[in-house]
Length: 242
Ligand SMILES: Nc1ncnc2c1ncn2[C@@H]1O[C@H](COP(=O)(O)OP(=O)(O)OP(=O)(O)O)[C@@H](O)[C@H]1O
Ligand SMILES: [Mg+2]
Image: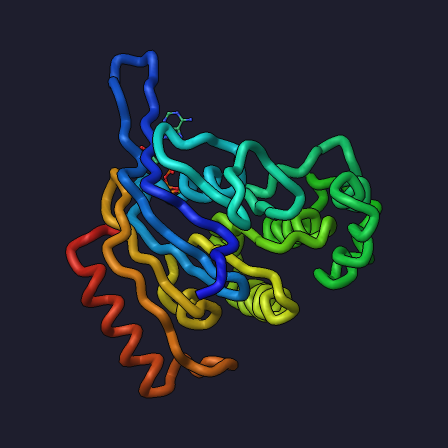
């Protein structure tokens, strides 16, 4: 098999807080290999360690033990090759939409257009709806043309039609060769977009199930095959609050 694009090798992450709550173990001995061209979706209970896992892959947080490798080299900090979309959009409020994305690269304007936001390029973040702000954050992550996109629930709290149009956009980005890793709470979203699903346990997160969806695109969620997978995932997550 080809060398994985991203790899976690026996990764654990502990947080020590000075607040008397002691040590929190977020990830425990996690092994995961992601191949180029996969669309990996990650589902797990709130607080189990999903964001921590993505931050380690991005190089924003170091593991307490174990290693994270990107194309065979240990990750030691963030890189524009690994785009990151945060759980909240995190735009700079004093910069226009265009300046927010330009900060990430001069192709920013092109990606704003792809997100259907050209009209709003001179607007400030407080003038945007939640969905628009998320699209700007996505355009910003895409501007440096990353090889890998790490997506932390980028489509939660959006109305159905915005959500479905952004899902199409993510699918297109993936089809153009970007390896995607998406944290979501939504089984249907995982079924719509993913080639693989990782189900995590309660904290400390360990991989409970690693499922490959061998289904063609576009996915019809009403099809027998999708319904079969959906039921299977619901059964696997029974008793765990996701
Ligand atoms: N910087 C930090 N300092 C201390 N504890 C932290 C820190 N970051 C995360 N944690 C703890 O690690 C655990 C996992 O957090 P994480 O944000 O990775 O969860 P999550 O799976 O993304 O949750 P959610 O679905 O709610 O976004 C939580 O108990 C959280 O309190
Ligand atoms: Mg999170």
